[in-house]
Amino acid sequence: MAQLQDEKSRTDLLNRLKRAEGQLRGIQRMIEGGEPCLDIASQMAAVRNALDSAYVRMTVCFMQQELQQRLGMTEAQGPILGEMLEEVQTLLNKVR
Image 1 (cartoon, rainbow, N blue to C red):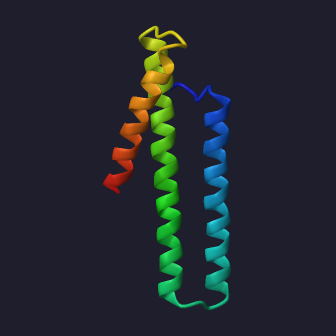
Image 2 (image 1 turned 180 degrees about the vertical axis):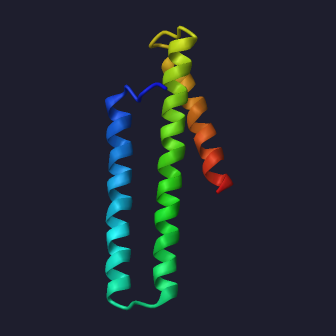
């Protein structure tokens, strides 16, 4: 399986995961502090959404990278594919 080669995409993905990690730590503190279950559930839903979003972003980055490589696209054609895949990402984010 291929790896994400674009440094910007990797940095974006790592930042998203670090944010979700911080949210998870916050949930742990909420549980330890005896916060109400509904508040904890709300934060869990937010983390799940953040992880889903990171997954979709990673998938779209992978698709762009692989399509460009396998179709032999030039750098000039990359932005056109990128715009189309951003629309795909928007659509996938609405499914959740």
